Length: 316
Image (cartoon, one colour):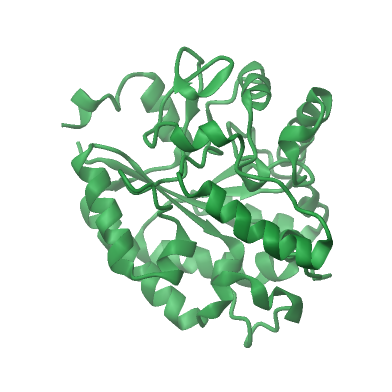
């Protein structure tokens, strides 16, 4: 059996991305869903890949967004819960508010798309044990919020500097410091200790990190460094028998100039490259993944994992 790979796309609106960088963008989700998502569908269609799209519930108030996501589902992709309102600092919210964000995001996916979501990602990877307990109680199969990188303090310092210079305050993220030392392979978390393996009946699917160095192996790294670094990460993960979860964002398939992205978003790292360059890099990486791994939806992976199909013995 080939090792699995999962492709994730976070469909944060331009307004949400702008808020993170202390900028302004009134476009909301329009460009993401009318321009970027069709490009993702074309890319995945050409590579014969099925992906998981994490959707913010409030964006489904727009009929154009609903129509786009129905097309996503029609082409065999998965839609997962990314909360109702994408609140930054979600870890600091009262439990009832966390539960409301998860519940309302879930319900709007069900009401507007007929989707009973089984997967979740916290905004800004700002997850904690309470959120996992809520997901567990709701019968979710997996969470994919853990960002197990030693580099989190450096990433936080960089974003805090930008946010304070523009907002006057910082937006927290990435969860607790100890999570940076959590597993880099999918696992069942321990109740009360998200960073530890345990008995919970859901799977934590971390954002993939390079073994040893724990450099994030997501689209930002692919676009900002050498593609060889990401290929090396994939190779090292393969040596360890570890699945690869490759994370993208909707903005990754927008072109700053051609798509008339609001100027305040110029600070966003993905816009340092033109669309054609990003597509070339993604096409190369996806070809490698499909040649060496079995690309699978996260919901299907979680079901198989919980049945024992993805134990180390099963994939060797």
